[in-house]
Length: 216
Image 1 (cartoon, rainbow, N blue to C red):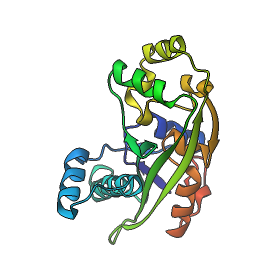
Image 2 (cartoon, one colour):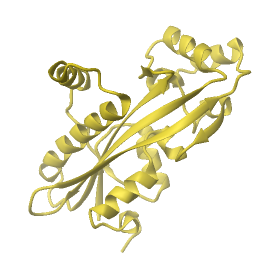
Image 3 (spheres, rainbow, N blue to C red):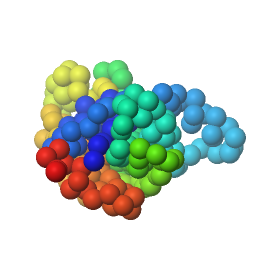
Image 4 (cartoon, rainbow, N blue to C red):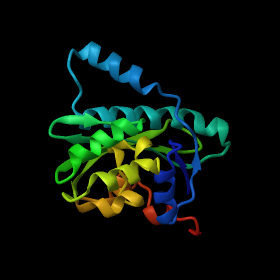
């Protein structure tokens, strides 16, 4: 059973590999900012985090599910897409991109708890017929250490790691030492809830263990 990851995220790829899965990867052709802006304009409201990440996850997976058989002839398996964002006190944070923004974020996060929202979409793509989809949102609460000082923040930001990840932190790399507690599936904070993906895959009639790279 083949697996395609509808993402170029190194963290999501690493998660699947650690779980025994070696996927092919395809970058989804989705203009995320334009999609959200158009949807919010049409519905005349700001999408809450869970709807935001689920909409993008579904669009990314759907785009790749339409293309995968052309780019990988004979593909028979599942396509997995995801999207994540971090919420703290009702404010949603994506990737900070600049050292200044990352530093400000960390000064505001220390000693507090936020929620990482992660949208998931899985398509069963068979050799014939239309792809079939299942989707869900997973959430995990993240508590940051209160005693993270300005020197530690400057050193962490200086590594560049927090600039290009949702919420400006990682739990599986350099940022992990500054996080005191995660409530929920820890892999959600890395970028994709493996337990949620397993449940979605099973709902599509596929055994999770059939996705392992060494499965017969």
